[in-house]
Length: 60
Image (cartoon, rainbow, N blue to C red; front, side, top):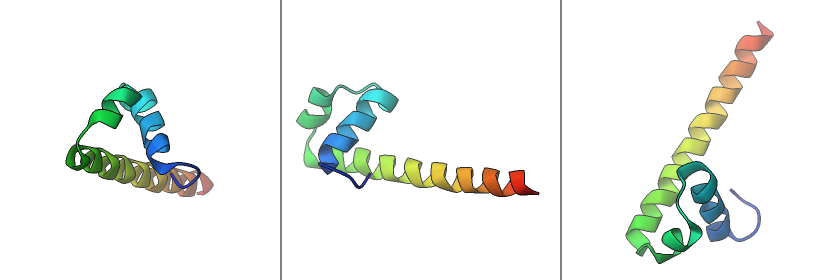
């Protein structure tokens, strides 16, 4: 999530993937928000690795 306003990108992800309203995300304390952001980052990284593995397996 590198383009635009970072926090807005995370709020967008929360809305569409986690069903957390942007207002709920915005009202979280910084520790809860940091946990959510770190969790999203881990999920995105895992998804990228899985996609790379699937692409590699498809070439065999």
